[in-house]
Image (cartoon, rainbow, N blue to C red; front, side):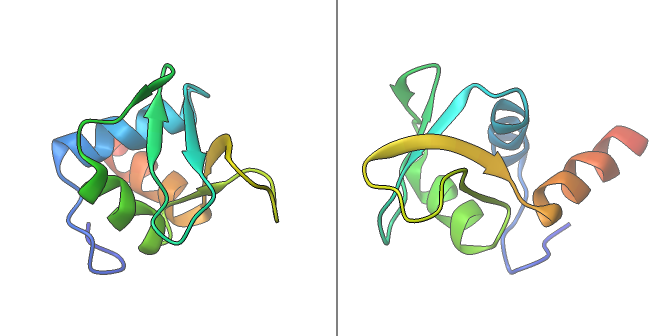
Length: 85
């Protein structure tokens, strides 16, 4: 699946699973960084692509700094497709 021009690689799907499990935070910025289990994600390019592609978003609107990350509807759909396969 590549809904918004984002290739959902195995790494991208693992990042989505971490967000779904409540293990991820993201920075509230124009280039949002992803943190999993308190550590900066090793592939921020993919993290940016997931955010800009509409798969993940900050859980708090208008927040500053690092906040919990959450899946969007597109992110949940991407995970459901892989679980069904």
